[in-house]
Length: 262
Ligand SMILES: NC(=O)c1ccc[n+]([C@@H]2O[C@H](COP(=O)([O-])OP(=O)(O)OC[C@H]3O[C@@H](n4cnc5c(N)ncnc54)[C@H](OP(=O)(O)O)[C@@H]3O)[C@@H](O)[C@H]2O)c1
Image (cartoon, rainbow, N blue to C red; front, side, top):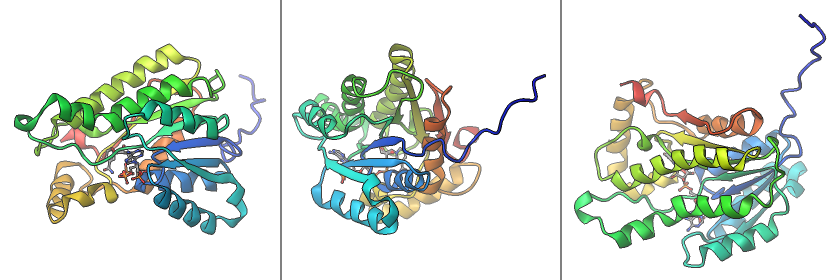
């Protein structure tokens, strides 16, 4: 066996890579941005709101003054009717990223099936489902056609593990996103396409639950093997792995405390 393997450099795999984080201003997106900046990457974050974008960019630039010129962003509202044009306009601002990570998600579309309407589906699937399709459609022209490039989509454990409380629509969208990941990985190769499926992670996304949030989290702790709710630092690792492993494509990485085992 050859002993001349050299010393692999694991620490600089993301140095000077450019990563576009669509919906990068939420809890998970900011954690991924921290990890990327610490790894020497350039980050380009999007939000639907200028004020939110400005505050997150300021926070990151203040925390990493030596990397200020590697931190940028742009407003792109994916909930508007002209979503496709907004994405085209976004890509005119981003240059040519090495990786695109799709994290955008608006208000949680929980509803009992008795309230379901076709209009509700159209409205509530736009940011989480139509957005990734359009990002793949237009993003592919930006990326180098090689395994160095990747698109990472975000689904969730709800795609495979039902829970009580009106989650049909989100389960449907989430399962669609994991299927989409596999098909795009096949169609867009050698660009890599992968998916992260978080379990419940403590971020602002759950604030809309108000007083019900603590009870919901209690149920989450009881339902998984680790007896805890995930953190954004935990799940950020899944995104980093998928950017760095140039042989990973069509893969769904779970970070959900063993919720499927119970
Ligand atoms: N947290 C969890 O437990 C969990 C579990 C499973 C899956 N996920 C998924 O993981 C992703 C990130 O989660 P998170 O907890 O970080 O969520 P979050 O804190 O709510 O952040 C969501 C991101 O989406 C952006 N966004 C919302 N509406 C948008 C719109 N109309 N156009 C463009 N961007 C929009 C938000 O920015 P603005 O509001 O500033 O526009 C923010 O950057 C989401 O897709 C979520 O569904 C999360």
